[in-house]
Length: 368
Ligand code: SMG
Ligand code: MG
Image 1: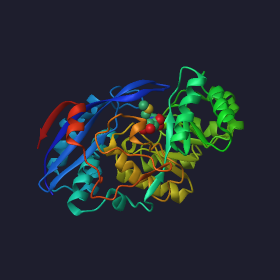
Image 2: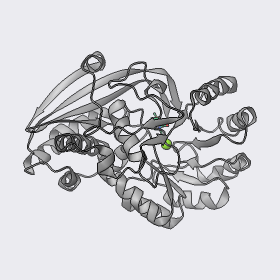
Image 3: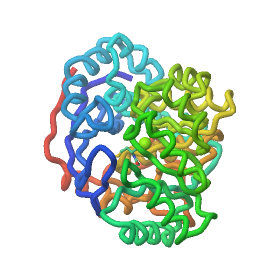
Image 4: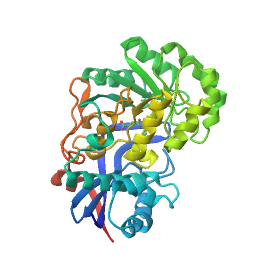
């Protein structure tokens, strides 16, 4: 299979409701999609970076720059395409994992479509559907939060994740527990908003029997998480800090996390995500699939990944309607709290031309 070029498609999709985290508020999802064109057909990649480097150091325009300037030319120069060789080919370029992941995803999709194999088969999925959680943003008031959570529970979501930050943590958690009971699977995500000096405060979450607290401290503070884990009862889960299988193994050995959030974009691709899964299974550490407000393309691949046996906790793999009024693919719709793993070749879904055109703000052809 030979690379003929890559189309970078900048898209902008309004969210059904603003999504507020400790680092900002999103009302629109802007991202770049990659159409990887080969002599044997095409494949789609989705780059999960946001327009601003607030979740992590990557951002949309930066990803487009590194793709067109370094990553795509290097891949083209490496000879015949092989999805399993993409990461190695791109290794000389430091970082830029979200951009690399998007390119690898597009190549993998093209390869699997041509071979008639699905992402689920390729990654090692062992289930045909996955249980779904939902990530609930910071709200203006506790009543507004309770309305939102109640709505999601009515829709069938099997796990609730509350975004937290200093000033919005113990009270919203208490309110959700009081209203919806102890049976609801509940967890929180701080997106690095605390410091170790907040340990005593975070221990006030202990009585609420949370599944986990996700990334309370800054990305590079792995030892801080290990210290924090000894001071609070809630299991610590890492998101931003885990950028590879190597960093996952190190964090686990240091006692910095008891659970790992796996996001393929953050770790450089779906193949590295599988290696993290394998390492965590080996270490006896539970994993779950994170989310980056993906379109139906990224969602298809995430749902396939979440169907691997070590994904024992529900993921942020929500239905399309939680984010978008109109997805770029046929929508993913919850069925009894689950999403079905696509079985068609490659991602098993493709963009709907009209829906894609509707949200496209710029298209750039990168020839090779
Ligand atoms: O895709 O449902 C989703 C979003 C899940 O909370 C989510 N993602 O830190 O885990 C996380 C955040 C990162 C993106 S926030 C804009
Ligand atoms: Mg997170």
